[in-house]
Image: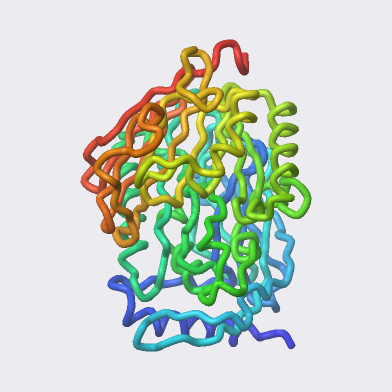
Length: 439
């Protein structure tokens, strides 16, 4: 039986009631038909953007209204009617919003909407809102096209309702990076996974997507192991992530929208889902797909991102991910390999053939983000026991780690700067573009 809109709003109200005693600053959801709104990149992010949102199952006419940010009165706004599917991913899954309230079983059935905005103007600020009978608040994104731009990169903020300061810390780090970027700011935000502590907890996603930063920017995200799991670690599924995002549907079979690729200006981005590759038989499928994507999309730079780390930051141990992927990265000249999960920042020297590159025109730099939740960081060994020759820099504050990176993509190089929560520069590296590629 379909739930009425009134029942849907009652469920949201119930969640907010529980959160009042949990969060230091209570989120107020817009009085709208839509919630869980996010902008994700289109396949060509210079002209296309993908929007995702949820509604009650009775809402069957949801749409996106959008226009240039400069069109302050929405006189030239256009509308795109969304398509939807019924999502029951969270129905019957246990969750918790506060230690005092205890656990409960979720009663969640929603229409998962998506819309693709096409024929956008490159290097342009847009605004959009969602609705059917009622409109959401205004949100924003910027299309690709600038010759030089920056993005903010954080990871592993593990949003968890009983510990709201985790999300506060992560969002505070992004705000710090935006300030450090100067007048031009950042074009988008990258998260390399574990946006939430348990993907199976609907309210955690709600609280994330209600953050002001999710309203102001396009987000590039990927599946972390926590985004994939429920509170019992028994009902784990990609659906928690797939049904909260609207990424390009160009992944290999079964991974549409979970593994995906897109182009943002001069960069070809390839996003991988580690949870799928936990099944060893899926690895060759993923690798064949990556090869095909690179072969058909010549670009100045190639970035590949997954959640699991390339090297363990505690002692420097080589990960399965590095061993699995470096031959292919060498073959196609991947410039930057990004990850999270380890909660320790690690940056390597340019590597080729599994060793430090002796040729300045080749090699991949592997970087993993620190955690940003001020709660689940890790302590490094004082000295590396492995790969000391390969690792250029590592950093952690122990359990209470908050850090993030500002990445600038230019005509001839990629610049990466690691900062702590105070905005103190900790590490910096410039990665030159591969000669003659993408010209």
